[in-house]
Image 1 (cartoon, helix red, strand yellow):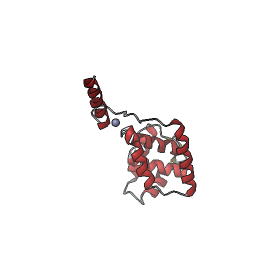
Image 2: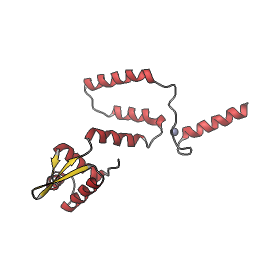
Image 3: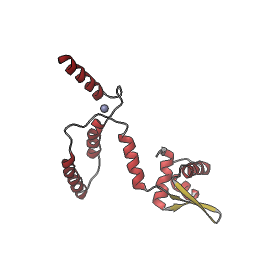
Image 4: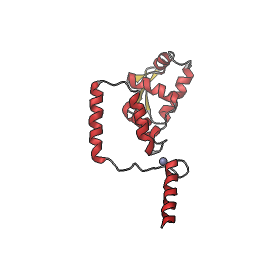
Length: 152
Ligand SMILES: [Zn+2]
């Protein structure tokens, strides 16, 4: 799934409204963009072509609705972000996110329960999943292998 930042702005309105028109989207997004009606229509056409939006003609105007759920799309964005970094750096990213996330006590309880349940599937060491040359851990693995080979 690839959604540009501009397309994401549109999707957010569609998720919030359920069913909406290009005029309503333009109205809402005029608070934060200087987009014209044709900008919005171009983005809507792209999202329909990608299969992310359904469109239906009602009277004189087109009504748009989402074919992707907001939560699936948020998860896909988060997965896409994490896939850009070595698996070994993911916990550091999570720590950074946790530090700056506003949370209720209930949120914290839920996260604590999740962390506890993760204990049963904890690994001894998180493997590096990078392309060799794109990450330092991979280099370390090679150096270690050489050292071990030479030592024998
Ligand atoms: Zn790595």
